[in-house]
Length: 301
Ligand code: SPV
Ligand code: MG
Picture 1 (tube, rainbow, N blue to C red):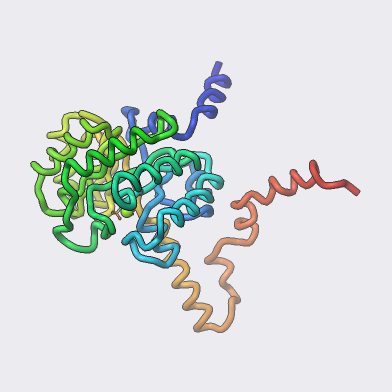
Picture 2: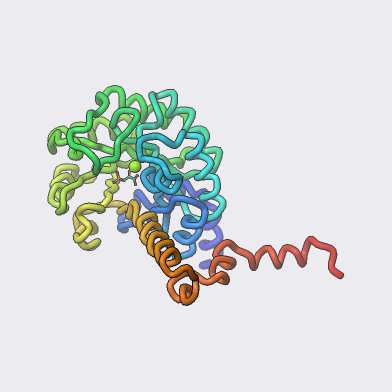
């Protein structure tokens, strides 16, 4: 019985798995990844899902979180991430890369490529990262609801998830506006609401949770209120926590330190202790499988 349950679970689409995470009463965690390698690591290490962060994918491409990477370039990154992982990917869709019609094109391609869900935010295109400036202008409730409906009407898989991100608190418009927008987005068909905050405590997240009264699952991004323990989010009834950019930042710190050391020492002697071994690189990208496949498919002499 257990085995068939496990097999049935594996057969569920990744979109279905993401939907189950969002709607489960258990607190779920999505870890940021920004390319094939990091998607593989996050998946290997047992995270239930991946956040394909716009900030991190952009930074990894060497560009700014301002829609400088085109939506097809983002799709190319996602292609590698889907292939490298076995868990659902929720992609940061920013504003949907334009109007409702760009949302439709984007969602269709995400479904074709096996991405499990998209999060779109109610900012104006081109978006600006939420931590960068105050009072970022939002699009009207009506315009954003049209994007949510366009996404839901276009998806090729019923389980594909559309998460609506409310930027009212980021833009300083207050809790009333945040709740008003979240209600409208929920009514327009959003599967879940991402409420974003850049306060250093989670107070406004908890207030939102009290006022929201569980209308639909809530997703949060505790980057600025990082010291709040997961148990407090669990108690508040949060559905899903996104650790949004920490693998990108870990990589950047490691790459800087390594580059500076090699520059200064004009040598790589002694570096092996602080970096991944070559064996780890080979095993992470699945070299064992190719050796096995060679035995099956190449002429054996
Ligand atoms: C991202 O990871 O790109 C996000 C989260 O959108 S944040 O940077 O907090 O806006
Ligand atoms: Mg983003």
